[in-house]
Amino acid sequence: MMSNSTHTLSVEMDSVHKHYGQYHALRGVDLKVAKGEICVAIGPSGSGKSTLLRCVNQLESISGGRVKINGELQGYRERDGSFYPLSPGQVSRQRRRTGMVFQRFNLFPHMTALQNVIEGPVHVNGERKAEARQRGLALLDRVGLAGLGDRYPAQLSGGQQQRVAIARALAMEPEVMLFDEPTSALDPELVGEVLEVIKSLVSAGMTMMLVTHEIGFAREVADHVIFMDEGVIVEEGRPSELLGNAREQRTQAFLSKVL
Image (tube, rainbow, N blue to C red; front, side):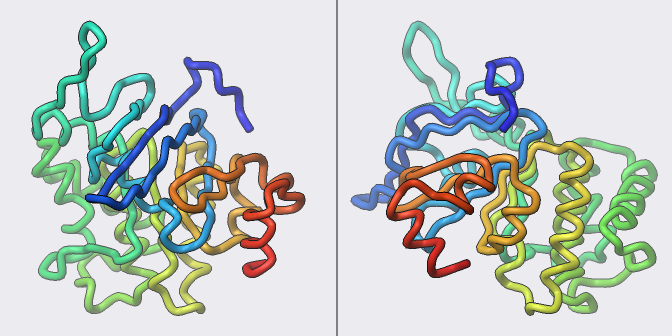
């Protein structure tokens, strides 16, 4: 795991809580992800992994604690020890720092692959269309979809659609990429092509947080694995430590079912 001194931290979560009514989804989560680090979250369904990512991305507002990205408090400003919520516009601007890839691809069905990729840069960032188009074609090439920019989502396989979704997230030039079980909606034979694209981002040194059930993939790419259960991080460490020699009984019980 990389150094966690403050100047190298990319994502910092300090005692983060999330309530949905009576349901306590995150129970005081503390997490530090260094710049360039790949942090993979594993654990049973309903353990809080996806909620964790959604709180980093501000798709969910936290109920307590703090989230910082590259040192900047997310969702609030702090003054004299008090916290004041940011406006929706300010939150939207902060959210551009994170790229989110979902289980379901969430592509616009009426737009081509290329149009999906350049929609954000043009309409949110104000990029000139010609420049966005050139960059969008390069991104589609990067995710292995050269020549498919004019196809609509319905004309693409699930794996291809997910790769368009990755290109779309990259088009906003995020500081952190978040992947919420990016292969769970795919047919088994299509999983590998998406994981290969994620691996290429790993080699490019991008900071990533990834929720996955692909334990072998976690072992291969992660710098830092966290095991979550019932809204808490039960255990964390290097993949060789946590996946090979877990200390906590809950972690051992989970891994015995999935390995």
